[in-house]
Image 1 (cartoon, rainbow, N blue to C red):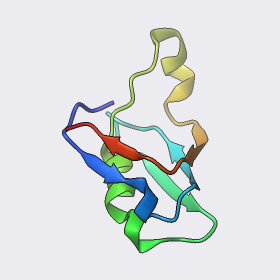
Image 2: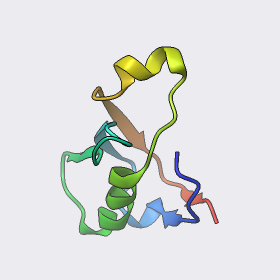
Image 3: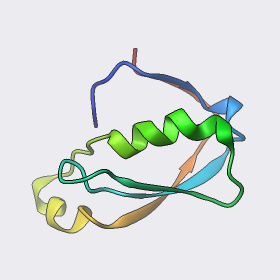
Amino acid sequence: MNTQKVRFDLTTMGCPFEVDVTAYKPYATNGVAEVGQRDPNRREFLEWLRAATFVFPPAAQRTAIGSSSRVTVPCALLDFS
């Protein structure tokens, strides 16, 4: 993933919640869609996921790029600062 300095308080985003993530980076913007009820407080977090470059093991990269995964986002503080 990117090594940006970011900080998200996921407890302010209606956690826990789920998102569907389709990895396309570095070739295109990632697909990210909220599952269930949307929450405008998640906007910055979802934009960060759209721009993130995920690192896959070489053997998995061919099938991981373009595949969707459902991710459950817990109630936590995500701090990469």
